[in-house]
Length: 202
Image (cartoon, rainbow, N blue to C red; front, side, top):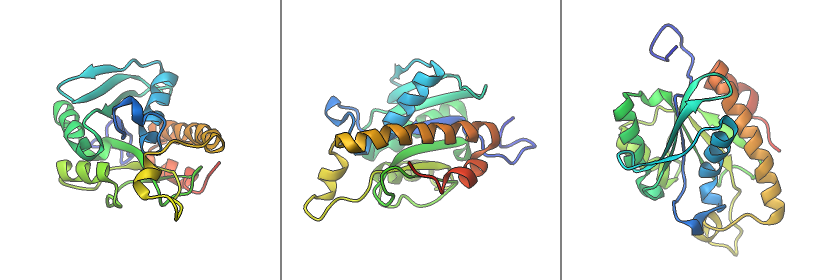
């Protein structure tokens, strides 16, 4: 059942993980959106395919919840993520409300996640691009905390840096938490998942 029909539940149909495509960005804080959708694809046994039309890696299949789901990793670099997202939403005629965009957030501490059904880009270049290409900001998003940079460390160095071994352990746990929140979003809607997961951390 879709959002446009009799139900008012916001059930994601396309989950977008944000990140940068080159190997040098693997496992960096800014690529935690990629990490989460990779985790989902592995859990749901869905294979990635490079899709030129969508300018990204794309996968579709059945989630553990039984829902048909699509996953996207834009290969456009972060600040042009909206091109890829718009290509998929146009092709499948998806409404912005059926999206769930996953990305890193410095304003949240490491180990914490936060779901929202709309909002501004909050300074995140990937989200700025998606909002610009969709022409609105009314779409669900899942932010994963990466913590603030220290006084000695510039913001760019922080977001493009890798997690320490201690932080990496927390990341593994928070990816499980985020996957659980998404599973609930697919079963009972994003707002239900918000009510149960926005106060949680690992």
